[in-house]
Amino acid sequence: MVLLHVLFEHAAGYALFAVREVEEISLLLPQVEESVLTIGKFHNVVKLVAFAPFKSAQSALENINAVSEGILHEDLRLLLETSMPAKKKKALLGVADAKIGAAILEELGYQCQTGGVVAEILRGIRLHFHALVKGLTAQSASKAQLGLGHSYSRAKVKFNVNRVDNMIIQSISLLDQLDKDINTFSMRVREWYGYHFPELIKIVSENYTYCRLAKFIGNRKELSEESLEGLEEIVMDSAKAQAILEASRSSMGMDISPIDLINIESFSSRVISLSEYRKGLQEYLRSKMSQVAPSLSALIGEVVSASVSPPCCPWPRR
Image (tube, rainbow, N blue to C red; front, top):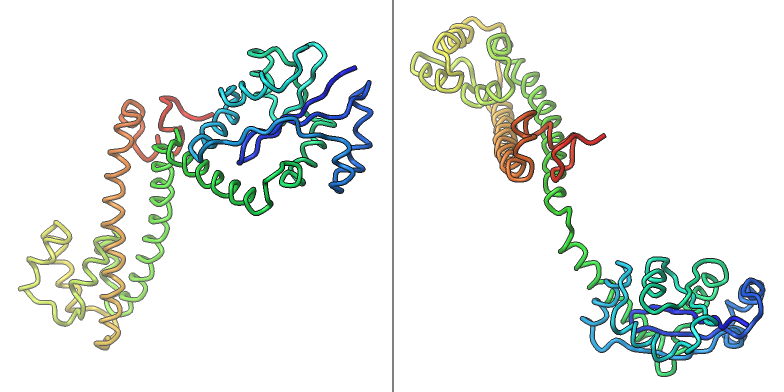
């Protein structure tokens, strides 16, 4: 006759339950399914053998990390060695995770089972756990779960092995979004300011430069020879600066009111600010990629290498 025990890991500690003796484990399934929702009937199926509470929140976190990684913690080893039957060949241990079951089999020699009736028994234990363990209330069990959940999640985020990758992924996504937004906003500046100075778009086609010119020029009628130096500084070309000055004198554009001009200049400033931020973000991405994947970045560029492969790997993603 097989002696089935079930291991249940809770935020409050480890619990070991004995299942009533039966010749075939599979015969238990209908009975367990029928009794799992009622604590009175479920008491007839399982019995608490041992409960090992965690000594502290830090101990609980260490144990849950060990279980998640399939490692047999010393606390769990002590519980099983002192509470499981001495005759290992006749004992069967039900566990929720096959990885921890493999570790128990390798280190302690107990045969482990997952799924089937074990999964149903664990479901019942999880539902009635606070009633099965003496001295444990539903409120204290819930607080333990909440506290351990926060600690476990915080540790996972803090020690995420892909944290460098995540920063680069967010940067490249933001770059893509900025490119779309800057292009859309620049087109809006062109259309808006184009009513007043339509010839400017034929002379300057680059979005960032156009927005700077729209802000600098303002009312085209106020352009003069004194403005040439400022125009040359923006377009970096004396011929283009002269062409802009001449076009402003013979422009076919409509007159513009001061309030309209204020709004155009304000919007142009926002687009310029976004463009300058994008340049800074590009430098940040270049710096990150040169640290994580210098060879790949040198071959195909920072943006492309960040988008086609994981930063920690020197080859493209397939």
